[in-house]
Length: 212
Figure 1 (tube, rainbow, N blue to C red):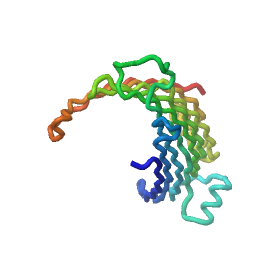
Figure 2 (cartoon, rainbow, N blue to C red):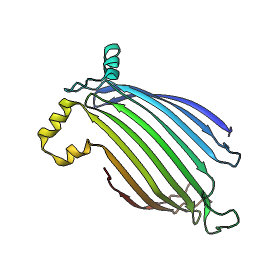
Figure 3 (cartoon, rainbow, N blue to C red):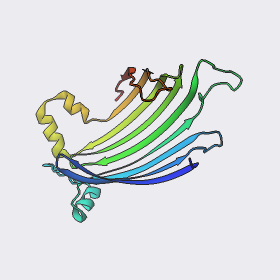
Figure 4 (cartoon, one colour):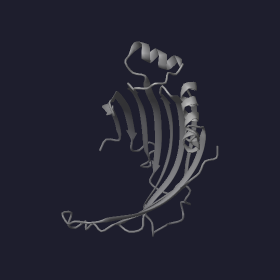
């Protein structure tokens, strides 16, 4: 496989009659630091014609609405570095009971503008994966932090308050959400006979909370 790759993708969408189009530019470098580290970068954007009974006074949306049939857009970027080892393992210490250890660190930013609200999302994640046996895989993600900033259209905010639904109203507020996850999977696949049926069992423990 080539050391570097650059791909461009385009997709047309139809969500409950709301037509849209999105595109993404993906860059991959399989040996970015000359130690088999993999770097992935994704830039993406999309627009959609969404039916709504709420209008937002935002210059960006006004520009899109005046010049195209679309009233919703989303842009974002995601960068991930994958290291073929545990990040802080001492070089002189072997861990023979762990196979194929990997550490992934990713960060992303996403900006979404809709008739009802503007939403900005930042995320930082740290994850380790390893195998204890050939058919097992263990994933530990102790850090998955999301920061969500949301600016509501005044008309939409009035509609939310009229519902008197505290859970729904709170879901459209600003949030800081730390999360963590441990996942273990086991497969009965026989690698010597790839045509044989097999099962995959997976156990997942996840926790998340809201700090703001």
